[in-house]
Image (cartoon, rainbow, N blue to C red):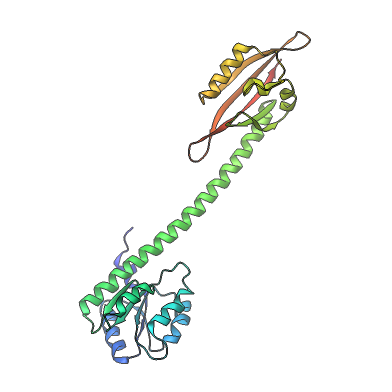
Length: 271
């Protein structure tokens, strides 16, 4: 994700210095290097308003200015950049100000008197990093939007799946990792009254008996192994001595971290 030269030369730059001679020097240097969108001011109090208007990619900021120095300007700029990213290169003739400028939020500094080659290189490198930072922010925003859209689509798909299963079967069920039923639809409530919970999950105290224990052990073994099962047929002898036959299909569910969270499935009575 490299920034190309044309993007860098189209970057918006603001130069802030109280000396016209310095502004003229930097104007010749930046225009000579190919930068076309460059603004200049000798009034530090105007920087925030100008930055709000143009959203500069880089601010070359003199630290020693009358009325409002560069440190005060950076403090004011922080209110416009809640993410703490200040696209500032500090300009100073005082070695002691360099560390203080970086601590105040400047991303780099250039010493006075200017070394023209150093200044051109630092400006270019700073703009390249800044444009990459902006592209990364845009990419992250797009990624968040895509994830939100995919999540909504999955939720809608899940809803459609449940509706289709309700049409295709007598009942739909979900149980958590402990085997407790969390979602049921259709006549499954009646089935639960017959002890279906004990058949699919753990045996419950007072659960109605009558299930074929071999069949019960087989389907619970599949659940314990986190395996899907399709059209598993089983039966139960009712109090009237009549055997009722059922068919059930189920699959394990996992969350986004691949942790097992339970089972879901459909079933119906076989007439």
